[in-house]
Image 1 (cartoon, rainbow, N blue to C red):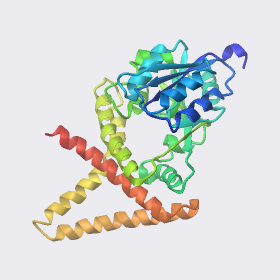
Image 2 (cartoon, one colour):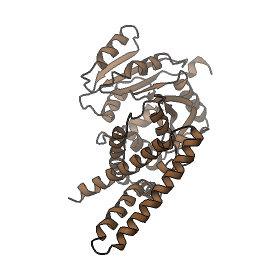
Image 3 (tube, rainbow, N blue to C red):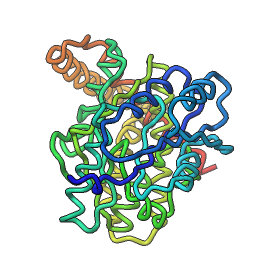
Image 4 (cartoon, helix red, strand yellow):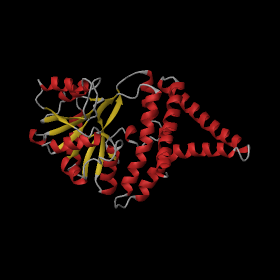
Length: 344
């Protein structure tokens, strides 16, 4: 490519109390091998740890770092402020608890540049992520999240090995004009704002998104089962809110979205069946036996799958088993809690 084909890009980082990760995150962006110009716009939600000190120290030697204040704290609001601050035609984003491969931005732009020649409806390109922690527990999480037992089929962006269309990806580059016309991130969403924006672009507005597996970033997963439970509980709750938001738009993809939503309801439906059967034991003890039989089948499937994945990937199968249980039950309880609160 000629140099004039590398436009200036704004990289957005929304953060709040990320002193453990923010320096590595920013340094990985400073060291990008992208041939065009870029700035790093950091939207801080009022950090009370050393996050701001770290950012301000980096600003002293890197003048392309811009720090703005996000009074609303939440990521969706912070990203919108950064987008509005940007003077670039394209924006990319990276979460503060991640760091990027040196060619992350270059690979995003390279894919966008090439595909815009053949696809006038392209709106963005996403990257793939890998475990940054490299612990036994984090490796097991990565394996679990890429498994079909966590809802990640072969078409899921976590399992894509070649450039192709997707309806969602992570750590993306966007055409800023399209994002602004689409209405930016939904600031009513505390979680899942990136999923909602991508699904809105694809299913409501008819744009196309791609994923480039050569564009790589690394993330720090949850450190224990308790933190993982909280994360998945929030995902279960807010993913349903995302579907409520999407269904409020006028579009022609209600069937597709309904199928996608049903898949996210499976953990909650499973838990509901177990709870209902347990309650029905008051009427007839046979329901207790049926409840235990279903649970036993579920446990058996998880044990077999965890053993196979554990042996193939050299990870303790019992850790995988515990992670699968946590994901399923936490996500399910998150969905159930939303519907219980809506019915009050």
